[in-house]
Length: 451
Image (cartoon, rainbow, N blue to C red; front, side):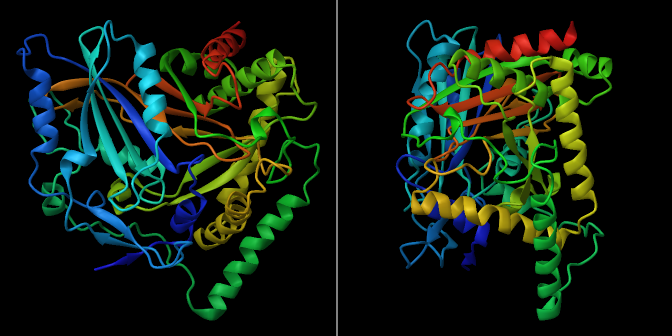
């Protein structure tokens, strides 16, 4: 039975072009067991492709009769070809992380085939240090970034001895149990309820737009136009690195903040350094669009998007790192307070109202040519605290690979795993040179807060 896409999910299809593929992904690194046989990688590949059917949402493709996909619906792909979606690759020797990131940059720049289920997974062997990698990408209309991470990691084992079906195996559909009610109050329904929700949600946006422009509380269209806010090409550059979570927690405790405060401060400091190196730092603070998940972990398999977004000042106009951190904390405090006062129905309306201009800017070609709604997207996704295993191989790290848009040429996403924060930076390599330098700038920004 066909399942229609929501307005938000359809928006990702409408925005997609050759220059702006609308998929999100993840790069996971695994350790090959010490006693692994010579044909171990061939066995991993067979494990990935020899499956008993395909589960939702991996077996669903888009069906639409209209060119703008306004009537798009998910239907089961009756001719699903697992060999198309799961591919085996290898790095040239010595297989450094540098070559791995270059390969992922190329793979992430390629659009998914719209006539098939919108996902692909690449098993990559030949990585130095007796490791292999699994890079998986899914269309944003299929899952948001948080749901995609939860979906993949919830289907990995908690010990090397456990053997679970691969994340796309049809066995997961058979094992899916009904979800208990969350106990949240039901949204108001009917015409009167819809009008009230629209009034309250739009009222929140209007109230935000009335805030002083020079304050730390931000909303859309309060960002300066920078080098980050130009048109993009289809070329991508991906950089990734891990940071010690206990180290970041210690810095957060030192300054009476949270891990997320320190993460945003690392981003603010890195962006300030990068734009100074390009002689392009604006006098006004950069504004980050920060996604906030509205989904619980057990809803990961539902598919679609369940997020809202808030705008946060990054204090990039402030040279002194502690004052910059204080400005970020003040900005985050404001948006948290506002979200906490809003009902789910108000948040839904507010989310649509703030995302429609983004979609229209992409579809009409105005994005990157007019004032930006924000400067970049920055996401912080909580992950598992215990080790995970893929058919006996321990996952060593998991790096997020997000997307960029016309007018928004950079995305920074971090995922926590065990005792690490895993940073993933993706950008248009033609619009923003030397993206890999952000890794050094993150370290310098954290070090100055520690000292």
